[in-house]
Length: 323
Picture (cartoon, rainbow, N blue to C red):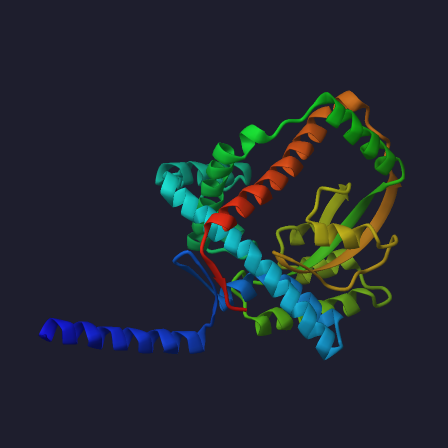
């Protein structure tokens, strides 16, 4: 009886704790036995939510768009949870030695020789050493799963490559390279919506300052940018489409020479861009870009097969969505 009473008391206490926890952080979904908190969904959706807050003025439309963005982010997180379950079941989690080898490779590629420099590098991308290791381990583990379950299905034929080159040549012949600079206002990966908005206002003020007559954008970037290119005046050199992150690239290729953008949100923070110069691009011959096109097609097909694989996992899983 005492044991039973103890169990009942523990259950009541647990229910109370769960109830209090839900008041603090609602449950967005339960995937098999894994919980996805609403805060996780909002964190994943933060860049798009920040864009909505500044771009959509109508409250009703903003609420509708917000619901769609949260739904998309929730679906992404559900897919990740399902893959994590498969990783556990198949014993595919990245080992400590694999993780350390990957981190050593990152340091080598970035010419980092000491921990303090590594911490500064990660901080510039919104990570701590701990959160970066967690992020990298998850990415490596998912890659193992993809290599086992998806990669064998991915095939690229010569016909695929020639069709891709035809499209590539058509796009490149009318495209250009841009030479751009930027000023970055960093946003931590764990930033609250209020912190994101504060950083946005700071970036907006910098955009206004950058447009003032006589202001040297490069000097302003040296003084105010929080990114690694600050010492070079935010100089990114010339680049083509497909090099930068999509949100950044979309704006860079719509700006005229000498034009300064509104703040652009990426996973790194808020960017203020200035296009210094645009120039025509010569179309490279097929053999020169064949390898690049093959890699791109493999990536596209891999993404498609991963989506199919996740859908298969969803059909077998117990999923309860609460938002």
